[in-house]
Length: 237
Image (cartoon, rainbow, N blue to C red):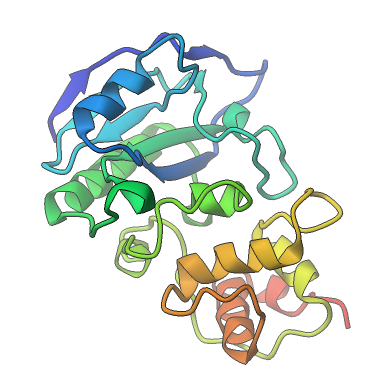
């Protein structure tokens, strides 16, 4: 894995005592890698990430992992609204939905696998704590999007993919989504349908409708079963 230092001034200290235990994956959403790197290192932009991975697999390091990068913005995951404080952000060069969204090349994905493995040797980040930008900020973001190979990456401990459901979900859908980590009203200011779209974009990208159905329920139950058999039985009903 080739790593090039490209420091960004857009960083600050993490809160005292906070160790990163969450990893957020993004796409750059700009026409070229050069544009994205320039913006991530522009002090006027006030955005950054810890790393960027180009389509050829080159990794750029912007912010030390011990410090807070400014990548997630207004966000929420597993009860935490200050996602930047406890997370590491990785950008993948891709023009995104605005400029010609496309599949992520093999070289880029291979570099991501290597980089995440390297990060996890230093930081206590569990597989289920590796998420997409759209998971933590669904009202604003769609990245890394429907073409991102979450199922493939789960084999390498990058995120979870649904296992075999142990039983059907009971109780409110919002409670079950929150068990996995998603923000739901009243704890976030976006509607439940927006959270459902984020769930579908990641786990059922062929049908992002914002409408909950039986297939979504089985996928979520399979995730909770993978995460913890106890959780899969704990939805209220």
